[in-house]
Amino acid sequence: MGRGDSGPPCPEASEPSQFLGRLEGLTLAYGRRRAQGAGAGRDLGFGRGQEFVGYRPYRPGEDARALDFSLLARLGKPFVRVMRPEAHTAVTILLDRSASMAVGPPGKWQSAVELALALGHLWGSVGARVRWLHGSNPGSIESLRMSRPVDAAACRRALFATRAEGGLGLRDLLTALGSGDDHVVLIGDLFDLQPRDLEPWLRARSHWSLVRVLGPVETAPPVGQAVVWLDPEDSRQRMVCDGGADRWSYLQALADQDEAWQSWCGRHRIGYHVHLAGTPFEDALLGRGPHQGLAL
Image 1 (tube, one colour):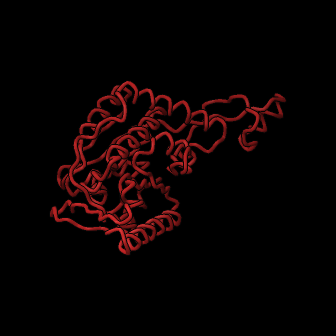
Image 2 (tube, one colour):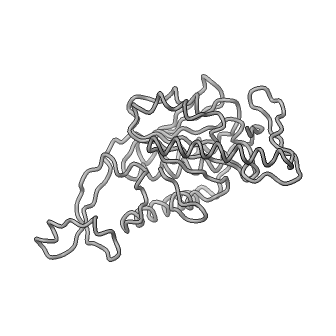
Image 3 (cartoon, one colour):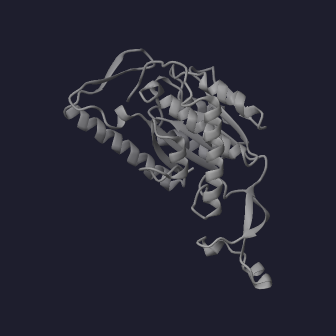
């Protein structure tokens, strides 16, 4: 389904300094939501492999289950336990940058890159080791690693300089996973992947998440207008729908795919989220807007 031409290098949605400011703002907002018991980070993996680092005063409105009742009994004042993930957590983010991700505007690849960088920034802020895997053709898988704050700028520049092209998708990137990955996040349109493709990889990983990035033209093709993409493998034109009955059939097939992914991910306790290209990554990660936020 939906394939596109190679696009230009992925631009930043804002100036580098502004993008960095957005990342810092995201980290602060994310921390506030977690402190308020709003559920942020519940499925991002922050609930796994945690270590106790201290106490802080209980805030009115927080979930009472967060209280340390033994401390309350001794001091007569409410406190909650503060936890953080263990250092050296290894997070791998697989980015589909095949030609299908060039569909736009707004560009699916740009949205995927921004989201991947935001996730990496959040993980890096708590001491995790982050790497991004991507590529355009088999045998050319690239790996970007961030184990220190100074690595972040170089990773941002490298990812924003790439373009969506070729036929290497998420299924191929799975072969580059290592045995020490604690958390694996897949970001792409999932057009090249089936749930059964992930089955052999699940046992060795502690936490998985899937983010399906789709463009507006894919989720709501124009009525009465043909929609055409190029297949990345052989460059032949492939008509997805012509705006009439084909449009309804295409949308039904897309809905069936989504339902199949939701059902499979639910059975395996895997986070699954559909991200519409052009939606700010802040909305996806903080649960703002029409979506409830990423279940990562």
